[in-house]
Amino acid sequence: MKSFLSALFLLITPALGSALSSRVDGVPAGFGHSVTGGGNATPAIPANISQLRDWLTDNQPRVIVLDKEYDFKGSEGVCENCSCCQVSTCGDHGQDAIEVDTGWCGDRPVIECTYDKATGIDVASNKTLVGIGSQGVIRGTGLRFVYGASNIIVQNIHITDLNPRYIWGGDAIYMNDCDLIWIDHVKISLIGRQMISMGFSSSGRVTISNTDHHYWTILGLGDKDQVSFFNNWIHHTSGRSPDLGSVSSWHIFNNYWSNDTGHAFSVTSEPAILVEGNVFHDVVTPTNPGDGYGMFVTNASTVAVCEEIMGRPCPENVLTGSGELSPYTTNNETSLATIAKADETNIDIKPVSQVQAFVVANAGIRKIHLNSTSVRRDYLKRRAHWRH
Ligand SMILES: *[C@@H]1O[C@H](CO)[C@@H](O)[C@H](O)[C@H]1NC(C)=O
Ligand SMILES: *[C@@H]1O[C@H](CO)[C@@H](O)[C@H](O)[C@H]1NC(C)=O
Ligand SMILES: *[C@@H]1O[C@H](CO)[C@@H](O)[C@H](O)[C@H]1NC(C)=O
Ligand SMILES: *[C@@H]1O[C@H](CO)[C@@H](O)[C@H](O)[C@H]1NC(C)=O
Ligand SMILES: *[C@@H]1O[C@H](CO)[C@@H](O)[C@H](O)[C@H]1NC(C)=O
Ligand SMILES: *[C@@H]1O[C@H](CO)[C@@H](O)[C@H](O)[C@H]1NC(C)=O
Ligand SMILES: *[C@@H]1O[C@H](CO)[C@@H](O)[C@H](O)[C@H]1NC(C)=O
Image 1 (cartoon, rainbow, N blue to C red):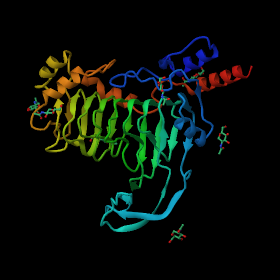
Image 2 (image 1 turned 90 degrees about the horizontal axis):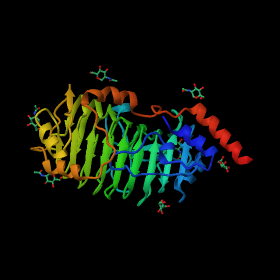
Image 3 (image 1 turned 30 degrees about the vertical axis):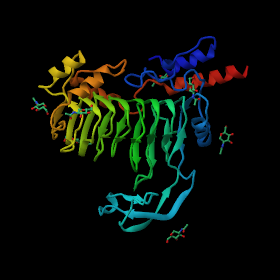
């Protein structure tokens, strides 16, 4: 795999330029195919959390490499004995909610709570954020792409431990009014709210690939969002996996849903959604009943229509031990046509028989070929070279 390793070698001979593909693993596909992130900027490892924050928020194109855990817990203080409310009566298993400006708690019983205030780094345009091996961890804060930001790559990073006990504890990745985003091989765990949240303004062209999620997963409500969502593993979730709405386009293929106790799709009017070649294993409610607006779902009897409009084979979805994956009333062929005409590039749709094994082996961090030993060695060599 020509990835990080070759990038760093190239830097030792500065006369050679290097393409995006040498700084990240693979090339972006789907709606986000033209993202370049920090482009040719020299890869660099932030020394500590303040440098990581500075580099993510400044207005320079950057390729930021994480080779360790960056722990933001406590970095913006802790809200001690603050106002929360009780949401569930499940004792230790349920979540309480942090009271927010909107007065979300309403009449729920008020309780005191203590939570971490670090809830998001404002990520500016033209950034590549990539982790080495499984070492690139951001603990205790999320990434909040600034309003209007574009051209951001997040690859091989684990975002974790964001007030998991509390609703409104923070989103792992939040975007609103963005464009050209590629989120790849990202693992998200122990989050209080959404894994990936896309606000009501357009998130433009987005590719979400090879990610590993559980709990409440994706909120995609942006007007005119265009999202390619593939090779992701969504497991042990209880809802909103994903929750989609507004006029947007979602091409959802080759994902693996497993062991989900609540609903997967919750869809209000009216995105164009093509769902093909996915596997659902032990998913109680693939589509929320009475929901599923704008969906076209492939199965043995609908693949023919899909193939006719898409002009290529459409794999069917396979469900075992699961409820129904169904569109609202009928499959929406307008949606199919919308996806067929959209500018999705480089996508490789696998036969559904390969999906489960591929996704389990491939989704999340540490699954791509960035060899930390050699990357480190080359980084040190490069640093030595600069000093001469
Ligand atoms: C973080 O690293 C930068 C760059 O090496 C350094 O200037 C700064 O003092 C460090 N900050 C802390 C809090 O260690
Ligand atoms: C929070 O409450 C505890 C227990 O009531 C108390 O001991 C502590 O001093 C309080 N802390 C603050 C900052 O008010
Ligand atoms: C991002 O990079 C593009 C292309 O080089 C440039 O036109 C744009 O101004 C940059 N954006 C910011 C916020 O620096
Ligand atoms: C997921 O469901 C399968 C089938 O019921 C079961 O064998 C497996 O143990 C479950 N996995 C987890 C991690 O709960
Ligand atoms: C089909 O989906 C489109 C959006 O792609 C929506 O405008 C239209 O109303 C839907 N048609 C039906 C019959 O649901
Ligand atoms: C395929 O889906 C359509 C629409 O939900 C449904 O009417 C049909 O019965 C399904 N066919 C098969 C073979 O499951
Ligand atoms: C990483 O690269 C080093 C140096 O090339 C090599 O010795 C080591 O075996 C590699 N490790 C893995 C896990 O591939």
